Length: 373
Ligand code: GMT
Image (cartoon, rainbow, N blue to C red; front, side):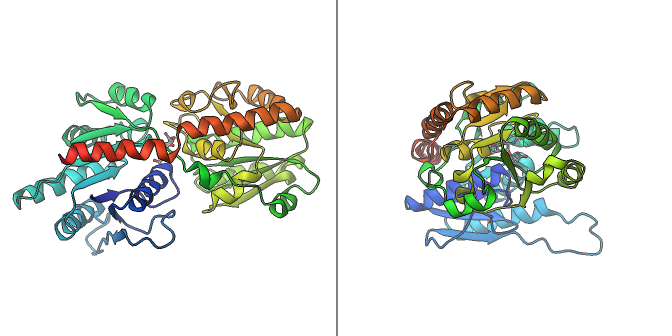
């Protein structure tokens, strides 16, 4: 199949998932055309079946706001016509679903039928999309997509709760390439971070308010009181300056390291002993799944779709939003006893395998075949 994938090229989970999906499909022999404004961060290495089309948005003094959506729709039309594309798969509704609708209408006038699949990822529904500034367009373009998918049952329910749509939503879970993340930890790297055998606790996100990174810090400081430990904070975003300022005011924060944006999560996660994700909401929590694939137990909230991924008392624990006492208590329970830690690590891997790339990518392939037919 010749498939065009539209996504955000950044470190966000939707872009990561879309890129990993495209790479997996290309490995299976499909031709994948990425359409986005920048090379996706996870699109590294050469694959003869992968093509990248950059959306250029020419500026003009009249434009206070360059019309990205128009440029995107025009690029979609161009890519579809010149590459014999069979279907458009857009990740994240805004503005990709409405741009796809526009492209589809233009192509129809040229007698080219192009099915559109929209995959909802989370904030496109729960935070941004339901804002009345965007909601009418998001509702319309979801209805007009040939197929709508969501990355968890929770996101499907949230979509019906927030939008007046009739369209069926198919749930296709996010996935992880377990073999890539399940690597032996690099001891030299581990020793550098934790020279005295301290436990390594990791959080990775885009440092937005919804991630509650201050709760990561609060939980860590409580853990650190009874377990010698280090905290690695991975990623960057609007809350980072605030979190950094918090760490300047406390003694134990010498144990906190900000690593910034990192591309090679599969090299970092295997050295971790625990992953913290105290989010206010996660439609899925791909970062937690990648940690589990690296055999890292997860301490998370029970918000959104997280209970569909993390299993309380098995591969991690879940607490109510903001309950950092409970999160710290659970973390200590896992970390203090090597036998319990080993059991949770093994369970994390078993749980991650349910979401292995080999199980989920065929679901997308089957959907594509159905939609094209
Ligand atoms: O978490 C973010 O802020 C990024 C966002 C995105 O759209 O890239 O992530 C969303 O999609 C991911 C991939 O499907 C999910 O794993 C995340 O849980 C989801 N984030 C939220 O729902 C807040």
